[in-house]
Length: 183
Image: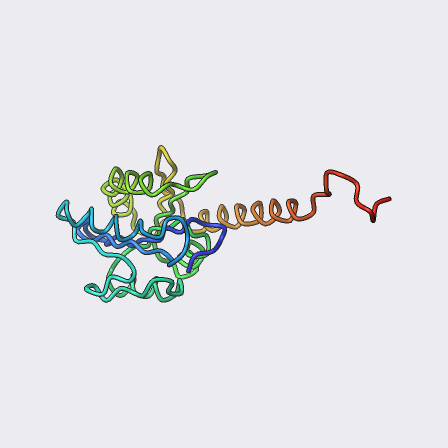
């Protein structure tokens, strides 16, 4: 389940090897076909991949609740890859590793997301493997860094507060011209 504050990308990657990469996303949104496209492309490269709604892997249905997706990831020994703020908070709460795709500013286009995933999936796996505890791999457009889950939770909460404040500010902006009420 994606919220408006995060991107529509949610994925899972195997905790032990990169031979399993599963992408998921909601049914609506501009990126709705990225999951299936990424999964098919990864399979072509010999990486077993699937996506939410992929019946052959018994993955959760598209639009499934975050808790269902995370539960499936736990049962199948996978790590969630997401831009969704609510999913990151859930992973931190459940003490589960997460890969946070954080493009800052405008959301990634489908091709940008695929290139990012293809170019960095091995790096993400390496960062996850190097940690003894569950962590957040914070993925920016040009670099990746490891954060504690508590630090990731703090950053996400800050981001959500700023986004809510920006939205409130947009709703409160006065009209450019005087209205009949103002005269």
